Amino acid sequence: MGSNLDRYNMAAPTVKPVIAVPFYSMYGHVATLAEEVIAGVEAAGGIAKPYFIQETLPAEVLTKMYAGTSLTPKYPLLEPQHLTEVDGFIFGIPTRYGRAPAQVSAFFDKTGGLWASQALNGKYAATFTSTAGQHGGQELTHLTTLPFFVHHGCIYVPIGYKEPYISDVIEVHGASPWGTSTVSDGDGSRVPTEGEKRVARFQGEHFTKIVAQAVRGRHLLEADAAGTSAAGTAATGTAADGTAAVQSSQTAAAQPTEAGAASSAAATGGAAVAGAARNDEPAVRAAPLETDKAATAPAAPAAPAAADAKVPATDAAPAAQSAPASAPAPAAASQEAAPSTTRATAPVPEKKKGGLFSCCSANAID
Image (tube, rainbow, N blue to C red; front, side, top):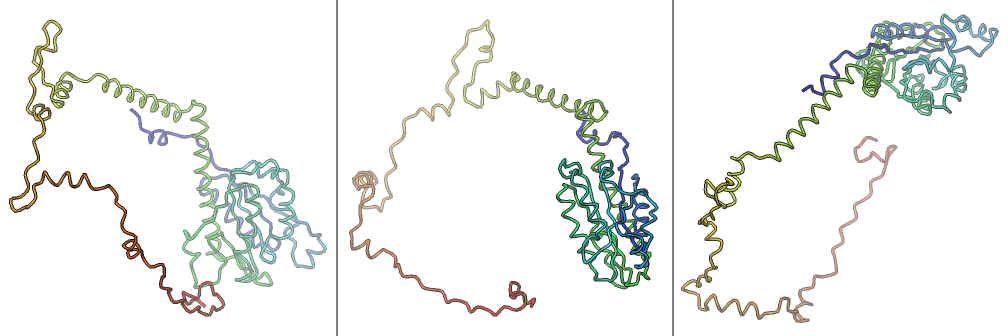
């Protein structure tokens, strides 16, 4: 009989997860991280589909900002429909005051139709970002992007601290458990370091492996429901074997063996003559066992009390019977037995003065 584990060990449909990597980059820092994320997706066996989020500023303004790479994107422009064609997406979002820039927000606003139909519900999402300073809002940008994914029903996938570089405190970097990031400096002169790019590659691999598990599980469930795959056949066989085993055990339980029946009869005290079980011989009444005699014998009178007792034990029963079951106690006695209604009041502890974090003052955090 096959086990439930066998069906998952069988060859499942080989379907690679498709991961979109849409990003916006004005000075090229997010674009550099995006390339590493794409490499990580492909290294984990996924199919990467990079997209660029459309620029909304005119060329004249971008020139005055010493920018312009966003006007000549390397990849196709992202459209809302592209998100429905993939299993997950890792958005590259630079920060503007701790949130997504106007270009990314403009794209989010174009997904109203997808929200109405919940076309993205159940898909996986992640983010990476870039800021000018070390405390310029890396984690806040990740956080303020979550409402978009939540309203669409997406599953957010952080990276945690599985990549050791995230915990590094020797050098300045922007990596966090939310996702990779970089610090560009105010004039954009700082480029992503090797450590930050390593975290970007790790994020692409980690995200793809998580999504791959979901894709594999979904195809197994679909194959089981259709009953056409080897896994579905194994599941059906396992269920059939289990049903047969239950029926066999029930049949065995309904037909006890002759030895079992004899043992059961002996246990209940109904011993029978050896030939009584056959139809061609009359049944013989079994002699009562010693245990039967003991059970049917009349009860012996109660043993007398100890020799030094002044009153016989037989006299105690009538006295106990004559007493009422619950005799009311005298009023005076009940009043004396009543507990006092006055309770001692515990002293009120002196309230401590709270500091800046008064809710945590007990722990001396403030």
